[in-house]
Image 1 (cartoon, rainbow, N blue to C red):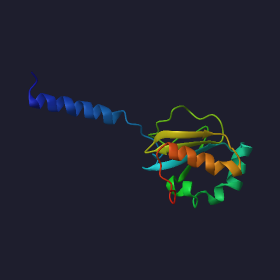
Image 2 (cartoon, helix red, strand yellow):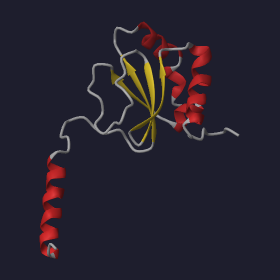
Image 3 (tube, helix red, strand yellow):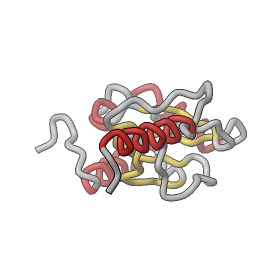
Image 4 (cartoon, rainbow, N blue to C red):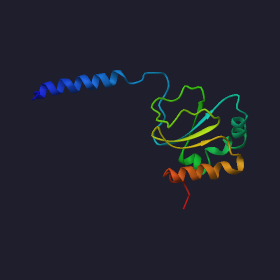
Length: 134
């Protein structure tokens, strides 16, 4: 049976090894809580349409107040600490994150008329309470 001091040194070694493998980069981790990550590309005309039609009012919308948006280029860099089901390759892709974990996804742009209903349905299904919803 190992002695307590020996266990402590094993724990210290394991903790040191865990810290040594943590990613170190200039990219920030996503803020805690619910976020909507828009994966986009400068060449994407649907992304430009979203920015023109939805983008100006997103932060003030129910969905925007519940899940503030972060923007990421499809080619990266992605924020550290994300746990995605798979790498997005369609632009735009809207990934609902809870503390960095993917909770839902909408691939493509469904148009200004359908965007908020589709997004809010995904948010409710993921368990996110929307402000002002009954």
